[in-house]
Length: 152
Image (tube, rainbow, N blue to C red):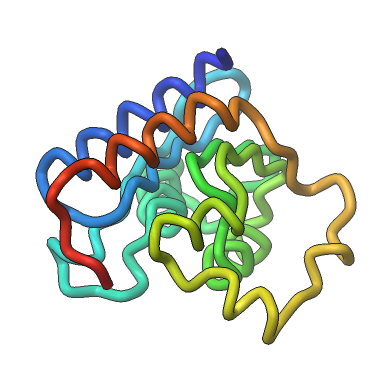
C-alpha cells in the first residue's frame, strides 16, 4: 500500500474515532514530504464544508504560507465531491489519488452521487485523478459502517 495513502487512512480513522465526521482523511504532499493533513470535521465543527480535502488544503496553505499549492499531490480516502474537487483546482493541486469511488461514498450514505449527476464533468479532467489502494479504503468504509455514527 502507498505510504501516503496509509497516512490518509490513519487521519480518517482518527476523525471517525472521535466522532468528527465521515471516513474521509487526506494528506497533501510536496517534494515527497507531507505538507498538509486533514479529515472530515463536518459534525465536530457544524460546518458542511469541512471535508478532509478542504481541511488539508487549509493546513497546507498555512504551513507553506501560500494559497498556491502547485506541485502538490493530494491523497484522500474517498473520491472528492465536487466542492472538494473544485477546491483542489483552485489550489492548483497537480494530482489527486483517491481510494474509494463516488459510488462507494454513496454506498455508505453520502450524497456525492447526486451532485455528480447534476454537475458531471469529471471526464473533462483527464489525468488529474487516479484510484489508489481502493481495497484498503473499502476496509475503512466497512469499519465506519460497523460503528455507531451520525448520518448527515
